[in-house]
Structure formats: structure tokens, C-alpha cells
Length: 285
Image 1: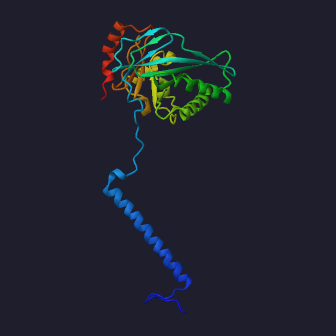
Image 2: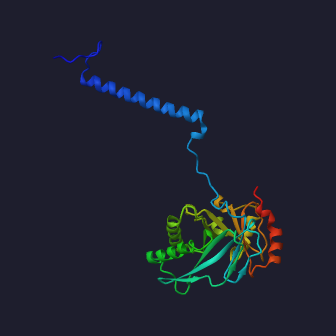
């Protein structure tokens, strides 16, 4: 029995069938492209957005005080306006070793205070670190460990890495970021020179870079002269700033998160005066 065919159709040879299929696919592809372009034109919000810098530390106050290794009784601060970045652990890199020194001094803050745990890394000059994979792994683990301290909601690493130590430091930060929860911001301090004429920070997996404009040693006058007429070059160095209460404030735009170091234990009267002086920094432009 013959198979019925639809009326008015004709049989095509293989070459004609192949050509018809190719034309059909081409037309479908053009329709899809034109449709997508029209959607993007009619609905700008569908356009893939450019990279947007978000403030992962938006929940933190604009004024932060560093609480270093000494008894700090900060129960008098207003947690709505002041946060605390406290030295939680110091790591000494010596030869192949990582010597871990925990915080030994008491710290008191109001219950609602936003806390950032700071890990300070120091390299032994007499016995330089070997910067091995093993040393990197131990350093990474020691940093990650403080993120689990009670009340801590951000992490900061403080390391004045030399040129030969930068690859090691970069790798440590990479591994720390990969293992931290996404909800835990990662901050780092930076020598002021790193944000001016010695930039190597691009691409580091941190949410905040805090250039320190105090205790700058031989770079002090050079950096201050530059900042008197300009600003830090990379944009990521323009969101936060580290100062010391016993040195002059730099000439920079306000609206940055301000980290304040005090050479002595914080006292209520002294802090009140300092906060009045730097109050402008807490106002975002």
C-alpha cells in the first residue's frame, strides 16, 4: 500500500534539502539575535551590568578604632558610631616556622559593637621565612581560625610584606578568601606607598584596602607632599584610611571609613576629643 503524502509537495534531492535546512537555521539565528537586541534596547535593565564595587563592610560604622595588644576597656563607645578592629593574633614567620601568639590582654566593648578581628604578620629579619607551601598553609589556617571568634563579623590582615614576600602574601590572601564564608568581609592594611607609586594590590581578593598614613618612616614627607595635592591612585585605596591620633591628619577628601590607632589605651575623654576632630570623616559625600 502506497504511503499518502500531503498535497502539492514535491520531493527534493539531498543537496536541495541540505540547502533548505541551512537557510532555515540561519533565519532562526538572525531572529534570535535581533530579538535579543530589541529587548536590550527596549529594556536597558536587561543589559549585562558592568562590575559594580559594593561595600561589603556597609554594616560597619565609618569610624573604627584599632585596639592593639594591651588592656582595652571600650565599654563607653557608642556602637552605632564606632566599631572596633582588635588585634586577635600575631603570626611570626621565622625560617620554616609560623609562631602563633594569641591576644593575651582583655577587651571590653558594648554588646552591639561591630567587631573586626585583626591578624598581624611579622617576618623575622635575622631568620627570614622560607615562604614555603607548608608555611603558607599554616599561616592561612591561623588567620582563618580567628574568624570563628565570638562576635567577629569581619577579618583584617596586617602585613608589611617586602617585595620578595608579596607572592607569598598574595597566595595567603587567595586561600583565606576561598575558605572564608561569603558573608565574612576580608580587609587588609596597606603601606601608603603601595597606593601611590608601588602598586601591586590590583586583583587581590579583598573587600577593603586601608592605606596607613602614619609611622611611614623615610616615606613620610614624600607621601604627605603627594597627598597635599592629589589622592591615592587606585580607586580601591580611596574608601578607607588608617591614621594615628598622635600624627597630623592628611589632606584628603572626607567620606572614607577611618581606622584610628592610639599609642596608649583608649580613654573616654580622649576619644571624645578625637571623634570631634575627625567627625567630618564619618560623613559620606
